[in-house]
Image (spheres, rainbow over the protein chains, first blue to last red):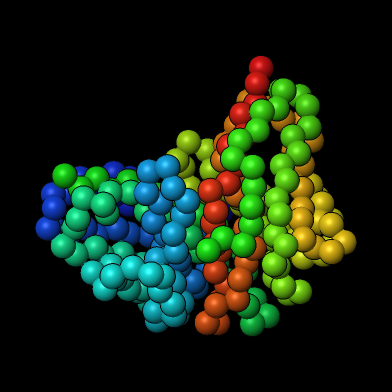
Length: 115
Length: 112
């Protein structure tokens, strides 16, 4: 069974540009979560999408946004990039069972570098 | 804020058991304890989770104290490939789902 996949693996942008990161969940999973991991720091929760809707977001500015498509894949968009947006962006997926979300499984991440 | 505290680093000899402690003194009755590990900036890898009872799978064992205020992840025969940052997480209900609040984890180094 294929795991969570993310693309691209690396992305280099300049300050002020926009970045688009993509995630494909495990087959059968309807929820996608996005996390940011800055160098040397822990994972910070960004966004949660389920069944095409944004369900929750972490403490990040509105220039971090995304969407989930009918096939449950997801995009994370970061507008007006700042140097401190340089980080590893991780996507995780899970499925709804008995009314609650099961274990999250993570992809390999996209490393974004803002110059 | 993370609901768990872990030692920042530990060493373990190859072939020996690695015992990684975690304190979660404010855990609520229906909150699960999860363990993940992250090897050299790859995506976190799920290891195991539990609520009250001890759990074991092919990767590790999880021992949860009776009062649920702490737990220990046990890698029974550590190998060099187990060198990683290990995260103990309390899964917290949040707006219809669960938040995984990652702390800074324990950096385990397995020594040859």
